[in-house]
Length: 169
Image (cartoon, rainbow, N blue to C red; front, top):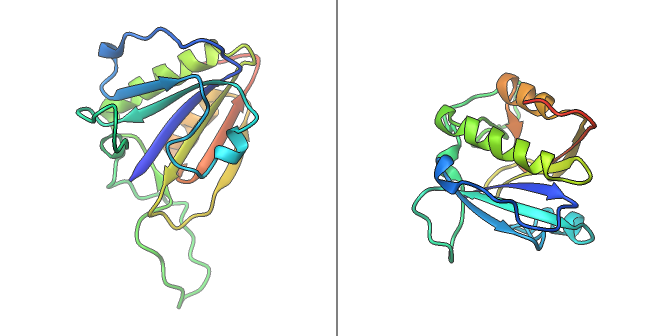
């Protein structure tokens, strides 16, 4: 199951949200611990507020995942097979958000960025059944993340570190 999380780095207090505005559930915590362990070592010495995105109807306790937010039919053109006889594992290492959730995710990321005293937001993707190893990508603008999203797709098991002085949607 996929885990999608946003971190407002350096933020000390929870961010006031109108939760009815978002078409998905949000858990917000001051302790930076991912629901999966993939990036917890990276987060261990950091401070901030983490948002866990989840499907509507999930209990606040128990399993928490964001499978409904993902366009599972998306196929990236960035997938390259190096050998003719090489087997490709099931499932794409890239994804996009379904259109009905995209603006909510963008809005939440924009809020997290603007509320960060460090003007830094982390965007974590984790898919336990995916075949790609963990990676970190640094970007200097949020709009570059959405450009990647719209073209080749975002990559599972990736921590996107977005830091800049100016931010635009």
